[in-house]
Image (tube, rainbow, N blue to C red; front, side, top):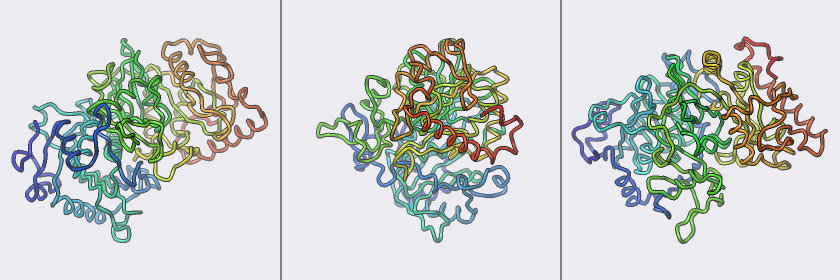
Amino acid sequence: MSCKTNIGHDISNHDLQQINNTKIGYWNLTTEELVEKAIINQEGTLCKGGALMVDTGSCRGRSPQDKFIVKDALTLKKVNWGKINQPMEPALADRLYEKCINYMVDKDLYITDVWAGSEEKYRLAVRCVNTMAYHNFFAQNMFIIPTSKERKNFKPDFTVLHCPTLLADPANDGTNSKTFIVVNMAKKYLLIGGTEYSGEMKKGIFGVLNFLLPEQDVLPMHCSANMNEKNETAVFFGLSGTGKTTLSADPNRILIGDDEHGWDNNGVFNFEGGCYAKIINLNPETEPMIFKTTQTFGSIVENVVVNEKREIDLFNSSKTKNTRSSYPLTQLANVSKENKGGHPKNIIMLTCDAFGVLPAVSKLTKEQAMYHFLSGYTAKVSGTEKGVHTPEATFSTCFGEPFMPRNPFEYAKLLGEKMAKHKVTCWLVNTGWQGGAYGEGKRISLPYTRAIISSILDGSLGKMKFTTNVFNLATPVTCNNVPKEVLNPCESWESKTKYQQQVLKLQRLFQDNFVKYQEFVDFPLQDVI
């Protein structure tokens, strides 16, 4: 039940009583109420079909260079410190925390209590405190809504304070810019300032779960997941833009979730209650399920362009190529009611190869799966992060390096152990380029990728004849409804010399990148690449 009150809620954590004594808070508003508030506050407008259209301002993607973890006794020896997991001294974090509290004192607040994690044993109780109604709406879309009974006795494990127009002072606050995302594991808060981009909330809490769960023998995964009616689960690893959301939204399978999951002793469970799909160039014919969400009340569409009839132009990237739709899983017809599935039968690692030389599909051994999981090769897709305008070859360990606080081998070791225990087959699927590198070749068509995925999931691909390619990967000679030249990238290149040059270049990149993991692995590298 929603309310506008200063009384009746546990606000003792994180000085929220200080805020609430001076300004009214809107607690656990409904979708209709939050949309109404967003429109009244001029945060967004309704487009055709009823979705709330918002613009996230100058930040239209994540800001990984502005993310920090407080370095203290709890995190000192557990976090893999570096350019990704940047340390911040507790005193500096406390100063930013006070700035956030003071910023919120004179503002209306939108507060919602949600779960992160559908498995009760491991879920995180999260309180989101926002100064913009649509951010609170986003939180309710993306996380899991507690029951009325659960909310009555809700005690947050973690609190998010989102201050979109509060700017840091880099010289005094120890930040890299006026934007900041600060996680304090010990004091259990996430601070976000200087950015209106909604995705910082969900990815921030994802990082918290990635820190906490491995100690409980749970593998946190940046992946989508679906299953068949026999509870046989497929997991899709991959960075944004590689096809996780698109390929898991299969009308013939039951969707578990599209982005963040845990793998425990019972199977796979979703961290979220919604999806956050890229919608640039979305084709309503090939991706009807996702398209429908852009035309539905209860969705948020970010940074889109509309015409005078308030119709969304899905092919207009003048604002950004990172246009998004946030929607609850309940908008999809074929989803798991429990947000859970069984142990994976197949793991599919999606990579977007900008060099154009990786096969469309390869079958991996356990050791190769760990190697490619640690490598996390793909191309950053334009718009997902600030400053990325064309695909760039990159290695993002665990297919989600910006969100993985611990040493990557902790996650890879858990992956290998669970694969062996549950006899899981792993595949590397390239959704990138063929016939040439980016700028010369063409991206593999979605129907071919779908045919490959279908053959994996129905078991037919595993029965095909395989050959070993130049990357020491087992590649099928044939696949139903897929041309042979798609399976063998060498055949799609006019210049075999250029092809070999690109192969050598990518092999060297793999080898150079993996140097930092060699001291941890216990398998011969010549067996994997």
